[in-house]
Every structure is written in structure tokens, then in C-alpha cells.
Length: 226
Ligand code: SF4
Ligand code: SF4
Image (cartoon, rainbow, N blue to C red):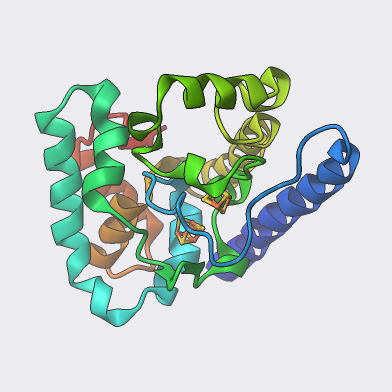
């Protein structure tokens, strides 16, 4: 059954990228050029929210040397959550947890299977704008210049193309529907926590993972169960 589910997930992820490419053609000439390129990984230190089914798909691709670290990093993430205000969580996460496990020499090692969230992040601003402490380090004038250069319809005061972030929500909802259909339950949340839950439950029984997640009682900002 998981093979069929993975096929559907890959199709949803592929469809998202296809629609994104078509939209980019529509935007051509209307927005400044997309700056994302291979080898630019400043954005790959965010807390990435994915669906458990996407996590199951990429779990076998984790480099073995990181498997033992999943528990340690998960505990650190929970500690960051517990010790800080919720509104500071994502900022501190980027500073303290650092690069994604799948980032290898600034290249995503699972590019073809990367989750919808990762696909949705595209920028039309200098790549430095995606650095975690960028906003702390620039002068007020530079900040004003940057904000002025942003098209509010497209960027909403971020370096990112926001319509893709919103579009991702629709595709994530489709993955959720698959989860509910097959398992009558859905979990989405921080990628590392999900990968660690898979590791602890030996990876191939989503029902066990749902149960474990429920027992752990994670805060909603880290894992959402429905
Ligand atoms: S979103 Fe920013 S950091 Fe990420 S690939 Fe694009 S330009 Fe580079
Ligand atoms: S899965 Fe790939 S694209 Fe997503 S954060 Fe990790 S390295 Fe970056």
C-alpha cells in the first residue's frame, strides 16, 4: 500500500512544480528574475513543515551518519521551543539548528523528492536576503530600499514569491486527504521530529507513528495531528 501512496505523493509534488513553472512563465517580465539556483542553500536552515507521508518517502535517503543524531536534534528543537517565546521559535531554530540534514555542499541531496514546502520557496531578491540574520545586519536605508523593491502583491514584504507559498497549502491539503483516506489520521510538522518518529518506530507502520506522536503530545507549532 505504501508504494501506491508514495506514487500519489510524488505525483502531487511533481504537479506542484509543474504549475509553479507555468506560473513563472506568466510572471516573466512582470517581476524581477528568480535568483534561486543550484548551490544556493541559505534557505535550507528553516524549520521545514512537511507531511508524515512525505517524511516516509525521504526517510530511506538519510545519510546513515545522521540517523543517530535525529534524537539529539529533536530534543534540541523541543528545548528551543520550551525555552523561548513561540514568536521567536523560527528565528532561533535557524540560528541554532542550522542546515538541513539533506543539504550537501549547499545542494539538496533529495532534490527530486523534496517536500512541497521546500518547492514553494523561491526568491526574486539577492540570495543574502534569505539569510537568517540578514534583517539584523543591514542599515535602515538598505532595509527601506529592499522593502521598496518588493512587489507587495508578490512578496508581501519577504524575499519570496508568496503565491507559491499559498499554492503549497492547497497541495499539502491534497497529501493530507491521502493520509486521512488510508489511515484516518494526518500528521504534519517539523521534518526532523517526523523523521525521528519514523526512526523510533522502524519506519514502515504509519499507524504506530500516529500513536507515538499522539502520546508525545507535541505542541501544535511543532506537530499538528488531525
Ligand atoms: S530562496 Fe533564497 S537561499 Fe533559497 S535558493 Fe532561493 S535565493 Fe537561494
Ligand atoms: S529537503 Fe532539500 S530543499 Fe528542503 S530544506 Fe532540506 S536541503 Fe533544503
